[in-house]
Image (cartoon, rainbow over all chains, first blue to last red; front, side, top):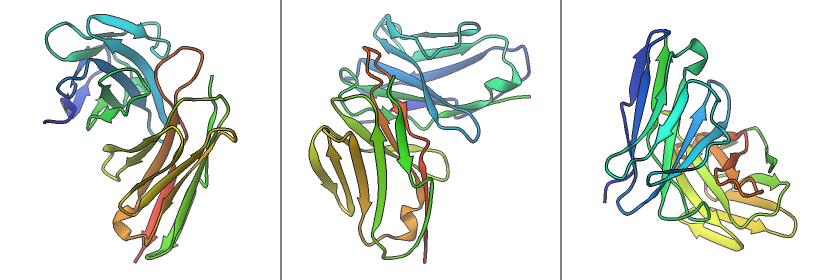
Length: 114
Length: 110
């Protein structure tokens, strides 16, 4: 049973470009969480999704950031018109049900904005 | 919103020592997570516990729901235990993502 997969592992973008981060949850998991870890800072919650639904996006910046988890395929975190401050490690986690289940973390995507 | 505090922030110990990392939170929760972040950045979920104690190898996690406090213990510590240990709790108020402590940077010297 493969774990949570994220790709790419490293992503370099220039200011103004778009970044797409993908997360494939563990088999049988329908709940996905995205977290961001800025340099020298702790992890912060961004968004919680179930298949085809955004449940809680209270941690998402209001502009340029969006997330989806379609019926088929991975969850996508999309950052439009990236700025240097978006440089961070982005982790996704999955669980079979709500947050009271153990969340299994992916290896993360390290985004560098030049 | 749940405030999650960890102590100590940094801990250096000798191989073989017994290690304790503490975590307190402000809002009553149903379960608390302990995570380990390796120097390479990967995150591993160590425990999720809602009461009492859990043990996995040399790691032991305890929680006191009434006192809103949890501890992570490492027995017979080893240099490979060197990592950042993070506790995380649901934020309360109906939101579903975890709120994280700032982490404890643990270094075990041979």
